[in-house]
Amino acid sequence: MNPSALALVACFSALTSFSQFKFPLKASEDKKYLVEQNGKPFFLNGCSLWRMPYAITYEEVKFLLEDRKKNNFNAIEIMISPDVKPYQINPDTMPIGHNAFFDNDVNKPNEEYFRHVDSVLELCNQMNIVVVLAPLYLGCCKDGWLEIIQQYKDGESKCREYGKWFANRYKHLPNLIWLNGGDHNPVPESIAFGEGVASIDTTHLHTSHAHPGKSSAERLKGVKWQTLSSAYTYFPAMETDTAWQYKHVYTQLYEEMLNRYKMPCILLESAYERERHITTQGLRRQAYWSLLSGASGAFFGHRDLYQLQNNWREGLKDPGNRSMKIFYDFVQSIPWYRMRSDWPHSLFVSGRGTFNATVYPGGEDYATASYTSDSTVAAIYLPTSRKVGVNMSRFRGAVSATWLDPSSGISSKTSGVFKNSGIAYFSPPAAINKEGSEDWVLVLKTTK
Image 1 (cartoon, rainbow, N blue to C red):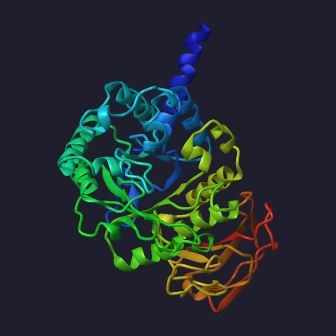
Image 2 (image 1 turned 45 degrees about the vertical axis):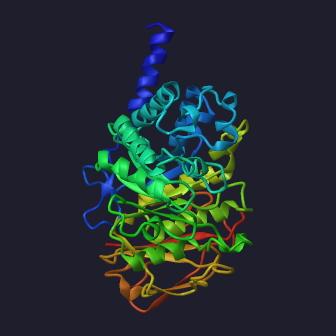
Image 3 (image 1 turned 180 degrees about the vertical axis):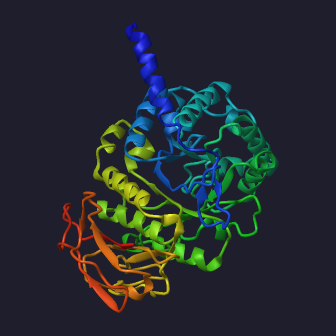
C-alpha cells in the first residue's frame, strides 16, 4: 500500500474511533441530567474554543480537536459570527480571508465563509464532539454583534430569519446544542433569533449565554424553546466589580435546584486559565463544585485557547488541561447521574467550610458533597485540606474510603472498613497534594 493510502486509512481510523456517542443529546426522563439517544447518561466535559471557526485554518482545527479528545474533552463551545474586533473589521487577519456577512447584514451570509463553517462543523460531527453553537454572539463589551443588530430596521425580523436560515443549514448535524445570546442578557433581537431556530429545529437542545450571576433558566423564565440551563459565574473574591453579582459556582447551582426549572443545567463558563489570577486549583474547584452540585457538564476555559491567537498551542500544555482530564476520569468512575447534592448536610456534617450565598467576599473553602439515592456511593470535594465528619448511618452497609489527589490522579485507599453508624472522621493523606495545593476528593463506597 502506498504512503498516501496508508495516511488515508490512518485518518479514517482516527475519525471512526471517536464514533461512540449517540447524538443528539436530550434531557433524562426526570429532567435532571443529559443522556444520549439510547438513554445513556452523558456528562459534558467541555472546552471553550470560541473563535475556532474563523481564527485558525481547517488543518489547525483538526489538530486542536484531536488534542482535546486526547485530553478527555467531549464538547466544545464556539461562536460563528466573528467578533466585531478585530476579525470583523479586518478580514485579512482571518485565515479564510472572509467575513461571515456582507454589509454587516445577517440576512446576507457570505457563502465562502459558511462553506468553511460547514467543513469545521462536519469535522466535529465526524469526531463525535458535542458543539455548543452560538450563531449570533452578542458580546459583553462591544465585541460582538449586539450594537450592529440593534441598528437594523426591524432587527427582530432580520434575526428571526437568520435563525431559520442557520437552523435549516445545520439541523442535520446530530452533535449540536443551540446557544442563544452570547455574554449578554436577552434582548428582543436575540429572543427573535432563538425563536427562529426553534421554529425549524426542536430536536436539539437549546440554551442561552447571558451575563454572569444568574443561570439562563432564570434569565429566560417562561421561554418555551429553552431546554437546557446554563450557569455562568466567576469567583466573587477575584472580582472588584460586583455590578453583575458574581456568585460561586455552587451558589448558582444551589439556586438552580431551589427554583426547579425542570431542565438539566451545565456550567457553561467560569474563570479561565491565565485570566483573573486563577490558579489550577481554582479551575478544579469550578469543575468539582459543578459536578457535586448537580450539573450535567462543565466547561474549561483558557485565555489563549478561546482567543486562538499565535500562541494558542502553548496553552495546550498548561496544567489546567491535565486537571480536567483527571476530572473527567473521576466523573466516569462514579454514578454521578444517580447522585444528589448534600445541601441539607445530612451526610457531610462537619468541616464543610463557609457557604457564601451572596456575592463578595468569602466561600472559596466550601466543600461540596453528593451521594446516591441508594446510599452506596458518596463523594466530597475539599478545596482546602481539613478533617471532615461524615454521618455513616446514611449508608446501607460497611464503607471503604478512598482519597483522590485531583492534581495527579493518584488514589490512595484508607486502611480498614467503616461501620454504617455514628460519625466517622476522615483526613486527607497529606496537607498538600502532589501539585502543592490543598484540594482533595474523598470517595466513600459500600463494600457489598
